[in-house]
Image (tube, rainbow, N blue to C red; front, side):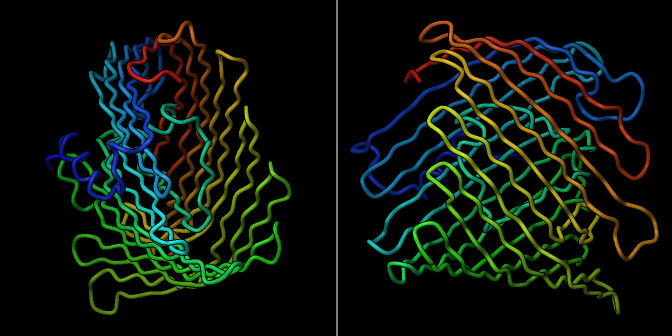
Length: 400
């Protein structure tokens, strides 16, 4: 399938961004980066001979603007890695647009659009743009990525969008609703592994006091596969958010979903009721941020069945001084077996990545990236990937 060009994507993104950009406060920059490194198994392939040295170049561009009533941004990350042995050239990219607008004093609108291309889960170990973890995870929309995707050496594409609104009913009550759509597809005419997914939620929140908010929500998900297969999940959750101080913020949700699977043949439907929970714990300081999040629910997978998925993750950012900073990200994702089959289809993906960079002058900075990834799955497990690289970065435009 032919992918959209960057210009066409950004043109579509501008359509969802409100406000007059010319009259808004704005920030624009482009980071150009070049690096050298070594990886023991960059594409997570099985076999003994998978390691290679590599050279990498990338570009990250950002443009953000804001007015008294709105804030919007466009960003693009494009990377090319040239492996000295075995893997040739591999490209990844991540394009996104975000917007939030106060339509009235009581109505807040928001939207998101993204398009990415990944191979072997490489994007998960990259640090670019705003500091990792600088934005709290949204516990209203739990998403667990199918770890089997990381074992695919072909490119995986994701096109997704989300729109929503928050309406203040009173000084203490509000309703938030959102709708999202995502298309996942793979290169190499793998239509049997591709699917479209649609998510919706309606949430009600009541503020008990300045620190505690409680409520409930209804979540729903529909996944459509080729050949008539489909998976539907719907269920309620109770929610709570507690601000222990100006630094600590805790959110949690617990409930259940009823999942129905239909393989598209006569008498092929089956259903189940499963636990659904998610949440986050975050601490924010002027120079540091740490956030831990978790989720458990039935999740659609590339093998065409609903599998119980569990994930936990940690992101950390710290400004060490005026010119240097460190970032960390760790995650574990596990999916269970398909209930309709007797074989064990359990998969687990573990990832740990870190980055240190130091500003050399107003335009140049340099640093080091380290990462480790491990995948266990049905069939032969690929060899673990240990990767390290050094890089030099140059900034065009606004200086941080």
